[in-house]
Image (cartoon, one colour):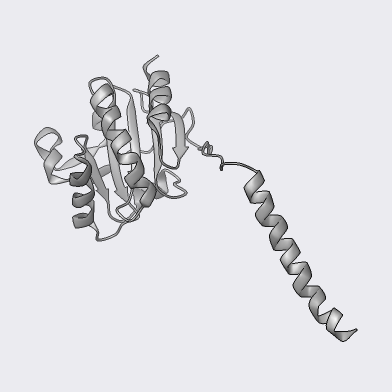
Length: 182
């Protein structure tokens, strides 16, 4: 009888963990449409240092308030983030397709003291849209990031249209940019 009493908590724990695992499998993919407090409101301004390759066009720093006037795709990424490597080619292709109408901005964040790794990331994908460095992660905090990657689709007046958590695909980019251009 004492052996049964000792096994009962183990069996109950295994059953509970199995039920949680099954629930996770059956619920499908996670919700990537995480609401933002900025939806329909102005996104926070930032003034961040640019990577060298973009300085001839924008100067040493990029200030959001100074580039308002056309829709924007603001993508937060980090050099250690695996999904960021998945989405970078999609962002570059979207920039090549829509870059005359939509400003793309990459923000390296949650990546303290990793500028060299950031340069390597930018070079690996040939990112031709401006990328800045958020060394202290204050901008990501101001935007309410849950993690990286996260992408903000912003109207020309600086108000947030949509926030997407996770790696963006070409389909997501096309749909959201289409909505910004209407």
